Image (cartoon, rainbow, N blue to C red):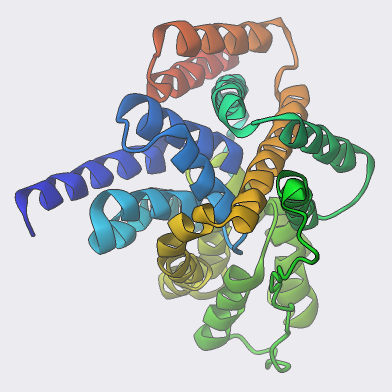
Length: 379
């Protein structure tokens, strides 16, 4: 490997290890932090390229922020980067969850984390809000994309339509609008949505092979939020196999939410509870492996997709629909996180520091954690 290649790989390693330890707040926050790091600070790519990666990520199953990390690492450092960047982003969260799972298995309870999240959540809201502002200026290119953004927001809040359906609807709507003047007689656009096929009934007795296959299936077909992950896990592990109780599943989801890095490290927790360290490693491998494969297949196609007028329009539509969904999630998170004057002040100050002074998001996260600790001590 040439010196430049080694340097790029070192940059990827350092960045995604840092994000793996500090990226709290779920996929929307992770993507906002990546945007700040790779577009604003390091200038690895521009806003349009970042948006195209985000749109492509939303069209494949799996954890969106992890797939963004893999995409970005692949673009920066090639095939070695694809593997190293993804592992560095997932690895810290996996290790933290593994330690928490060991404590849970021994004492049967979760450690107190409310004080930590109290200070961090307002910072996360500010980080996402700034990313939405920056990306929105690039994504909304005219009245067609503006109307689509508003429509997706309305549908999200006032209907129960699945997120992936909203993404595809946004993509198809913008495709139709931007290509209207071409007066095409028909559209030959087909988007395979692979059915959620269920494997043959598995034996109820626990074994590591079945555990791996369950999480491999989930990682291969799951679209949507952590709540969708909860539904998949409950169907397979509580109802069909009877390996977990509802309380254990809720605790596993909680661990995935309060630790940094991808929410899908819930798999690590469940794997440890069921099969110790080997179970944790296999469950983690199973749920994340499809993401590496999907990114490796889709990344080289993104420039070709952008060159096509029809598929480029689809990508524009998916981009604004993705930002609309991020906006909706941010609104919901904000209502749950900004609960008193202190949290509101933390969010406002964080936004100003980011917008005006370009403060690194990592330091803001640390500052939020300290504020949460001080508040807990005072009360």
